[in-house]
Image 1 (cartoon, one colour):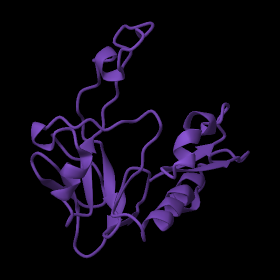
Image 2 (cartoon, rainbow, N blue to C red):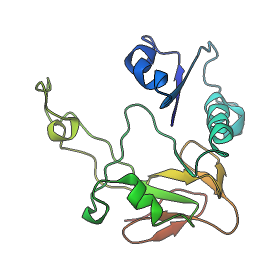
Image 3 (cartoon, rainbow, N blue to C red):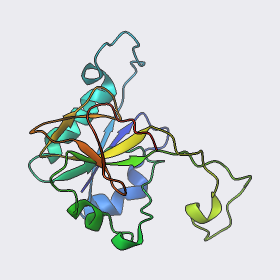
Image 4 (cartoon, one colour):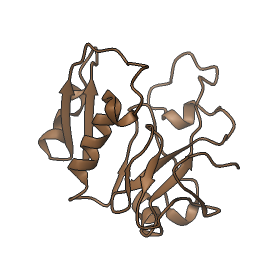
Length: 178
């Protein structure tokens, strides 16, 4: 199930995903807000994005074990051949952890002005920023809850987030050195 919260889109996403909504694969929620981001909100949980994330935790907790919090322009690329590009295969290995973490990188234009018809995103845009400390996570809803910002979780039951590959573990602050 995908929970898609469409906030103030100029062109609503619904028309692109209507078939998935009809099949029950996507729960689409459109909402409007004229309120700008407020820098004086001291807690992430009180801001618009924090409240939206908490709603997703509430919706998913009784039905799912895992939840990724991503923007529409973000993707997860599995490069370890032992998982055969299968996210469920990866997650099965980490069910006792609070989250599975992956380094966050940005893809650039790679000098491409127009993508060729039929050419995939990852085939076209091959240049990205170097791997840094910042990571994104897929929360294990049994052990994770809303964190201090959009890229962190709080963990319960002695659990922590883990980075596949080297099995490095991290608590609340989602920054890992290479």
